[in-house]
Image (cartoon, rainbow, N blue to C red):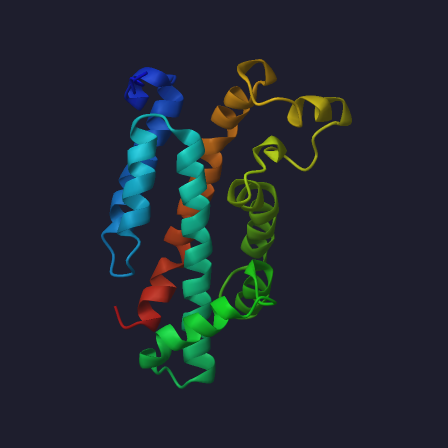
Length: 197
């Protein structure tokens, strides 16, 4: 069985197609930078270009988590190691190996000096509502934490077309990817300055 993929311009309404086009353009810019995000951004672009929203969100959440870790590394280099960029990979490895220092701990550290409190709150929510379900295959949890109780059966029901996951994903995926891209765009200049770019 072969799967015929259609371009996003044929798969979505004009408003959604325009949003996807803007995301693809933003991702081109992010992927060209010196931080090595090109693999992630090109994967997201490829997924978006053929309407693979589930895959695009999944890669976007991983990219955002990588970006937050990169910011944490840069902050530690600046604040605890006199700006010695040569320690970048050693610090990154120590963060990765510290199982008690996860995403929320990184946000707490960054909130004090780098990330605006309102963005930290949005990132906490994004992590809980989007990143965790995608990272752990818990896609039945997708959606707002304020889902009305009468919808819970539908959310945790089967993953077939009757369950409506495809439509819910289409309704929210572009917003989730846009959020990730906008956070990266907002704080990337800070990160690049720390590394002398």
